[in-house]
Every structure is written in C-alpha cells, then in structure tokens.
Amino acid sequence: MNLNSTAASLPALVIALFLVAGCSSIGRTVDPAKYDSMSCTELNSALGDIARNISQTAITRGKVASTNVPRWLLGGSRVKGAVTERETARIERLKQQEEAIASTRARKCTSLSQ
Figure 1 (cartoon, helix red, strand yellow):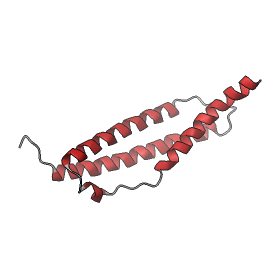
Figure 2 (cartoon, helix red, strand yellow):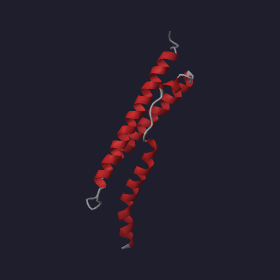
Figure 3 (cartoon, one colour):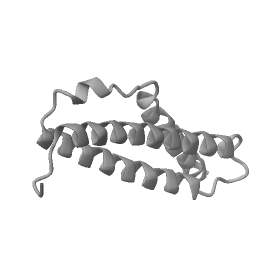
Figure 4 (cartoon, one colour):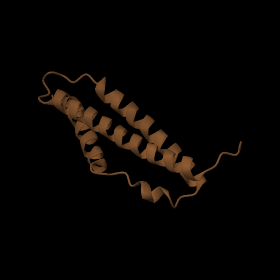
C-alpha cells in the first residue's frame, strides 16, 4: 500500500514543481532601452538565447499539454491548463523581447554585405 501512495503522489508532485518553477517568470516586462547599450555581438548572443528559451518553453508546454492526468486527481486538469497557459504567456513575453532585440540590432548593426 505504501508503494501505491508513493506512485499516486508522483503526478501531483510533478505538477506542483511546474507551478513553483514558473512563478519566478511572472511580471517581467520588456525594456528596449537596455539593448541600446549592447554591442552587435551581445545582441546576436541575446537573440540566440531568447530563441533557445522559446524552444525549451514550447517543448515544456507540449509535454505538459500531452500529459494524461488521472481522473481521480482532483483539479489535475485545471492545473495542467494553468501550467500550459503560463508557458504560453512566457513564450509571448520572450517573443516581445526577441522583437525588441531584433529591432535594436537592425537599427544599430550594419550588414557586412553592404
């Protein structure tokens, strides 16, 4: 019986972990002015980091969205939906940040082919 209670609490533990880990990203805003002081190399690096974060967040969102939550886990579907929505919001914030970096890079950095 002890094994069953441990196995039953595993999905709840995983969902709780996703919620706790995601709370740190709530409330951030994009400040385009901070990118003006960056060099072209730093902007390129930041753009790559943002793209990697978008990909990782999308993978996480997909894994959560495809998780089968047992019916006996009360509120499990609601938590799954909340985590998916939170990851979607994070992707949107990252895309805004990516657009700000890209516009600053386009303004500041000239192409070598010109």
